[in-house]
Length: 120
Image (cartoon, rainbow, N blue to C red; front, side, top):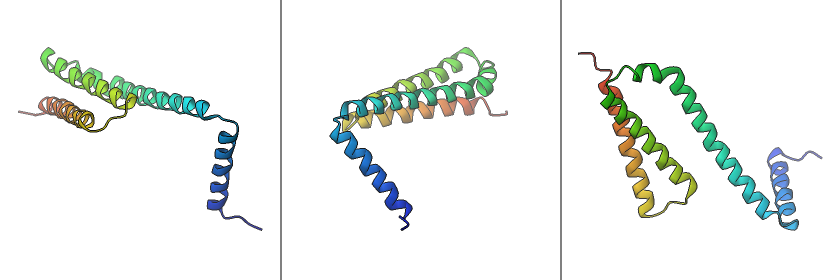
């Protein structure tokens, strides 16, 4: 008898859930989830660093000091804002503040970058 792949996958998930409940592994599971979440944030940060190192550093280094401070300040505030979102559960006014700060940071960084690419 051949079991459809969807049903086989659901049975595997159900078996894992039963093992977690029977062996009382909820704490270990939540710890593993937190570690995976931190690893995901670190992976995103590493990729962003590699992109900046290969493409942005030389170009941004040619800008005047004020524009560099504005650009890097917007990026730093955006990273802090993302960290706040990853570490806490946002709802209500906190979520509104998160999205407003993120939007302002992206706007400032993109506008500063575009001002440097106008050919006039």
